[in-house]
Length: 235
Figure 1 (spheres, one colour):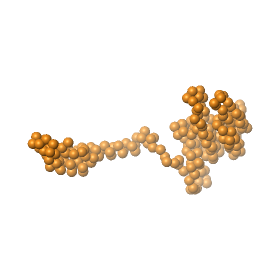
Figure 2: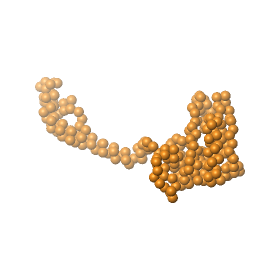
Figure 3: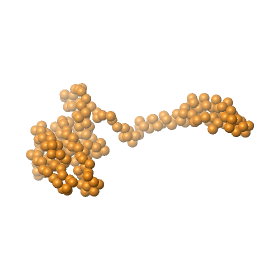
Figure 4: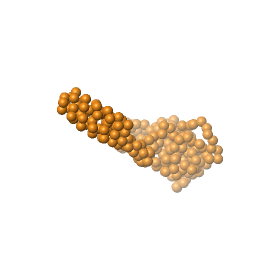
């Protein structure tokens, strides 16, 4: 009221404290007359001591906040990369090449899935499997496992299905490439508003188990089928 705004640094506090010896009494006279003169003198003298101290505390607060943001892991988790880390390829052939968002994204998902368990196996390729919005809220809750964007990853020895979301770190399933026997596409209509194509991978890993991929278009299902067949030939 008498000496101005709160100082943001020690330098501003020192300047305000000294200038307040003259400014505070003047403001007091203008606003309250003779009574304000004595109040202004009191606040001006007090400001010489208080203002630099307030400025120093403001500086310390900003420094401590900056240190906290570099140390506290919960703060680091709020930061997001503009793009995935660069993919370099296998170690023996590691070369700096033109940045590929697709390869870098696939490597990023592989490094996250199952806490990076399959990263050392080497990323080869992937295919994105986008989901669609459920037609109604009841459909979302009735079929909760088919509305997520997925990624199908291929390493040197495994085929991995995982969620695209960075918040998910668990794979839906993992199949050894050498165990794949055949890949089939079937049309599924569980509801008049719910029709999709299911890519079924028959594996001999555990008594000829079947692993499924949900695709919302027939074209995407064919792409996934070709992807799985190509991946099985790389083992």
